[in-house]
Length: 87
Image (cartoon, rainbow, N blue to C red; front, side, top):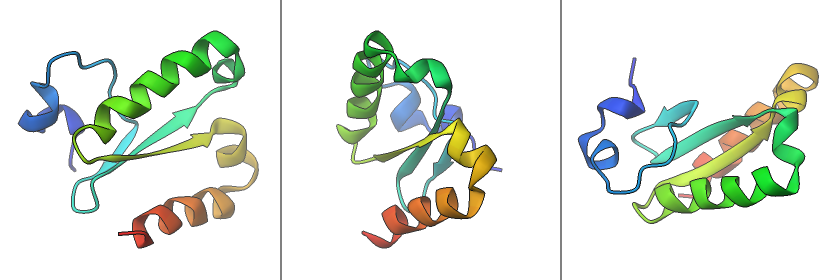
């Protein structure tokens, strides 16, 4: 199974601030499962920075709230598939 931490290009990038929950290397998509605390203003600002870091490397970020994953997994999967289809 692919692990983002093993991606030398990403791992050795100066200023790395996080690790994605899932990474699709062929599509260059990082998926983040956001917990309830990520609705707070301070966390949203931090997450915006986290989203921008992979984008600078050509990696698109998908943020899925954990509530959506628990309560509507089919919709969460559709959102990821939509981003993959946007190549």
